[in-house]
Image 1 (cartoon, one colour):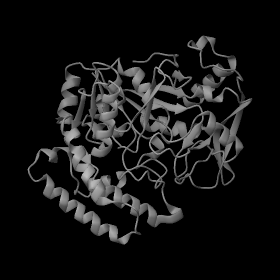
Image 2: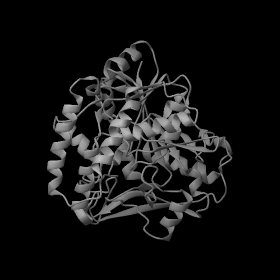
Image 3: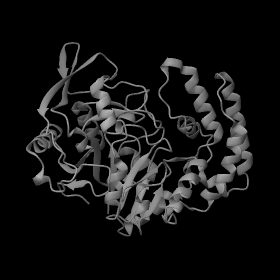
Image 4: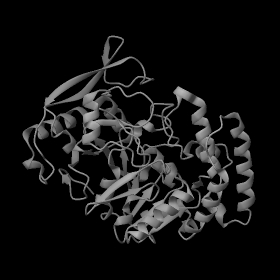
Length: 424
C-alpha cells in the first residue's frame, strides 16, 4: 500500500481542509506531516464553519484515525482550545494520536517570535507570531522539547532551562507586549488536555498501518511556495511543505508515496510579506478579496489577491509530483467578464515559464485573457452541465500544466464539489 498526499500549490489558503474532509471517508488514517498552528483549515458542514489549526481535517469523519506527525510543532494552548471546541460541537476526539517526536511550542517561543519580527521593521517577513520559527530553530539547533518529554520525569527542568535561554536571547530584541508568566500558566494548564491524547511512535505506527493494508492520506499545511527550501525565501514558513516533507514528517520511505493531490485556487492569494508577481493591488484585487472572503482563518489578516500564476503552478506541480489537481473557489470568478491567466514571465526583456532565483526580481507577468462565464455556478454538481467558458478555462489549465483537473470546488460547503475525474 502507498500513502497518498494532499497539499497546497500556492502560498497556502487554497482550501485544503475541505478537500481532505471530502476524501477522508475513503481513508482509514489522515496524517498531518508538518507545520503548526499558523495553519488554518476551514471546513463548512451543514452551514457551520469549523477551523482547525493542528488537528487533521479527517476528525469530522467517524471511524477515521487522525495522526499528528513528528514534523508538526504543537502549542498546547491552541491544541487544548481546539479540542474543547470540537467536543462542544459533539465531535469525537478519541481518534487523535500524536507523535512522540513532535516538538512543543513554548510561550517563550512566541515571545521570541514577536521580538524578532518587531526588530525587522519594514523588512518583516509577515510571521503569524505563533512561535513556529523559533520552535523549528530549536529543533534544528537540538535544543527542543518534544511530546515524548512529557512522559519523562525531568520535563519541568528541561522546560525551565529552555525558557531561560529564550529570555536571555530576547534581550537583543525590542520590548514587546507579552505577559510570559500568564502565558506560562496557560501552557501548563493546557498540557493536561494534550496528555489525554494517545502518544505514538509515529514511524512504526504509519508503516505498520501500511503493511496491514490501511489507506493513509497525508495532509499538508501552508503551501508549496512557502516551503523552506523551494519557496520565496526568506518569506517562507519554517518547514518542508512539499511531498518530500511527508517522508521526514511521518517517517516513511519515498517509494511509499502514492497519489499526490495538488490544490490551487482559480486565482491566487498570499498573506504577509514577500513577492507576488500577479498581485492586483487595486480595486479589482479588492473585489476578489471581498467575493472570496480572503481573510486569514488563523490571523484574520486580509489576504493579498491576484490572477492565477501558471508558471508558479507548473513549478510546484513539478516539485510535488502532482497527478491529481483540484481547483477551488471557481464560484468566485462568477461575475468577471474576463479572466486573466499569467502564462509567462518577462524578465530583462526575455520571456520564460521558469521561476527565477528571486521571485522579487522585476518581473512582468504576460497574460492570456479568457472570457468569463458571468453566471452563478454554485448549484451545479455535474461538470458536463458547466458553462462552456468554465470548460474552456479548465481545458486551458490541463493543457498548460499537463495534469488532469479531477475536482472543482464551487463554494465553501462540503457538498459544493464537482468530481470531474477519478479520485481516491
